[in-house]
Image: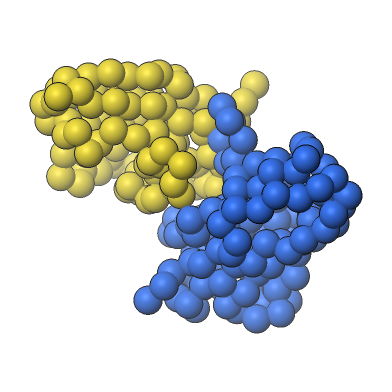
Length: 108
Length: 113
């Protein structure tokens, strides 16, 4: 079983749509959680940290369920610029473990 | 503030050649890591460092060496290049390790023929 499981997509959504990504992780010792975005042939960039109580940053909402070892990302009012691959990243013991990502394309 | 700088951006090597991928950061970050990214796979950790003089192996260390003589620099050495090492290599640094997330360099695209 992979340490981090993500639906690879692609998710093709129209501008203005709401889209949700899910992720499960297998390492119960994971202590920190992040969502990164990666544009085609570019480096990953930190989108947001994920806290136990859930957190929001503008149009982005992240949720964490430690009992189910499940992380989610919700994007509201999608923009063309949101097109990217979204990487789920749990961290533990000085290391981050990257999922292979979910590809999102926002269509005009 | 340049962030994390990787050189070269592109490299073609012949099987058996050795080379060093350079990584430098100007943010005074203690934590630095090297990842490789292959198509359809997540980034995989090669080696990491939690400070000058301290390095450790990640998930896929075979065929690679690192050293950390200064806080700023964390070079990755390929000892004898193999086609299986064709990949995109990312260097990353962090203020405090996994709790704070990492800042990535723009990557080195390596092809071994």
